Length: 176
Image (cartoon, rainbow, N blue to C red):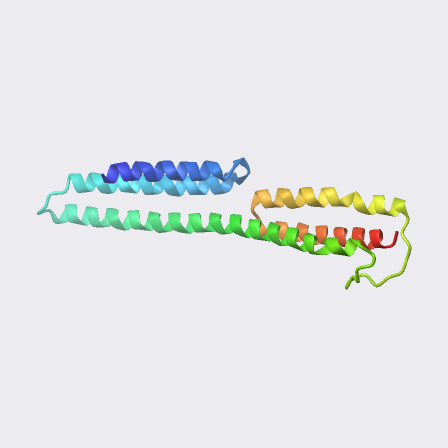
């Protein structure tokens, strides 16, 4: 029945909102509010259909208006859902890009391997490596934190800083 399908839809959206995690409060609220609007409008539509008198023009107008309102809420829900999905996937894509970039730099730790972005011949002392490497865990933590927030812009910004830190570390390690 339609009522059963509506209840399943509402439950599925509750699970989707919960699965976003506590740090996605704004997206959770948007999704739940959009879901509530659909539920409320569907209940109104069902009520107007149940009480509709086949000959009454007023009842037909009420049903038509309820259908229109429900459709608007469904479209709004769709936009919100797509926006949440886009934010999450773009955050994930940025994190994957960062990991791939760092992975591509690892072979350059070998000083015998030609490195396209390191042509300097300066010597680095072990204490320089300690100073350089202390930023790596912080950069990684910030990337993970930004990825959890699902904000691609934040992930990319932090990732660029992390890339620069990692490149500095590799340059230093190559000169030992």
